[in-house]
Image (cartoon, rainbow, N blue to C red; front, top):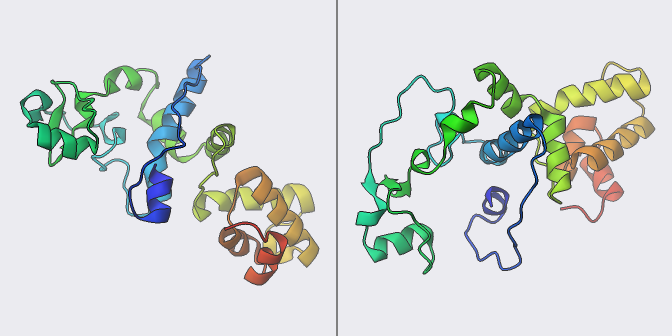
Length: 216
């Protein structure tokens, strides 16, 4: 949804979307899947600070600030207000959920303390959100989604690929052919867009568009 809204700047009816389940088979997978969900908003939107974004639960984990159960219980809201919150005639709201500033407070429906307990400490939680780029890409591809990885997270990957594939310290030492090979690898393995490929490899935008004519 975050990617849809960022691209189209409007809400819509997701007629083709079907909810599904992902089996969690290990603690590591649980941490990775949790981090993938929590990081989506600030990866898609540059104005989001995950530790202060009240629309998600990321700000609740390992926070030194106490969570105060304030707000209006959903059970006391009018039908019209509930409909406006859910944008639906089907009011799937528990009576004890709380509305704060015209939204449902995540702390009233997310068992964040239990989720938090699956991370050893705040550093491990932060690493899962900000550093485990390859795992985020892997999960996105498994869900059939296009990975959205910011340039600053892709740059270490670019330097690593330059060293591993070409024995170079960066893209400036690559030939045109090597840059094209790098672009193909970044597209296939990390889902980089045409604009991002041009920025990361140093290829001309027209060259990248000619290589990947069907990409948007």
